Length: 210
Figure 1 (tube, one colour):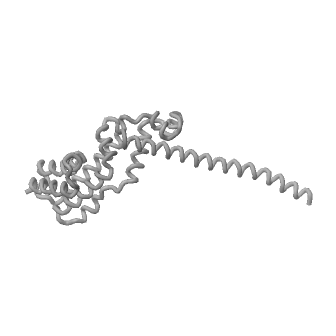
Figure 2 (figure 1 turned 60 degrees about the vertical axis):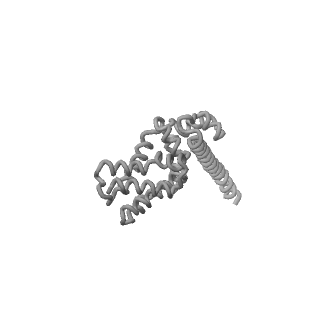
Figure 3 (figure 1 turned 120 degrees about the vertical axis):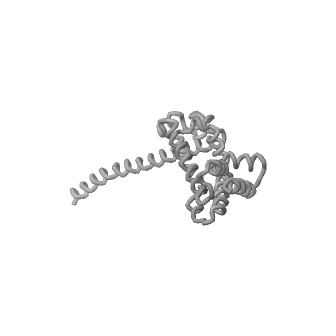
């Protein structure tokens, strides 16, 4: 009986350190994940306020309350951090839905619905979108090419069924209507409501298509 108890005690002593090490690993992994999240949050906030071109690793580290070395341990280069920031920001937005636009049969009404969806997205994300477009030269190619692909999809979806959609003037009108800069000029610069801007651009496109 004594021998059996001694064996159980030795086994317990062996198991206890193993459990303790496992617990420490889990806690360390959780802390690393929280640190990474703070870094991405800091980068996102700075991109939205001062813009990517003026966001430094030192500023990110200070805002996240970590060292520069810690930032680089999680993100070995600026592109990796920018991609993480971009993915997070997009995940927090209600993105335009060209699939829903396509369900509208009438091409003019589809144009109106699509522009309303785009202008709502532009208004919601205006600070970040303006900064990223202004600082386009520092935006990683992967982010830039993804944005351009989305913009092509928006245009092609809204061109469906429009008279003369293969004419350069019609395509140019739709491209102009779907541009963030157009919305910014009309709604921020001239003070139009999103609805008024949608109606103005719908009229421009339909005139070009007629």
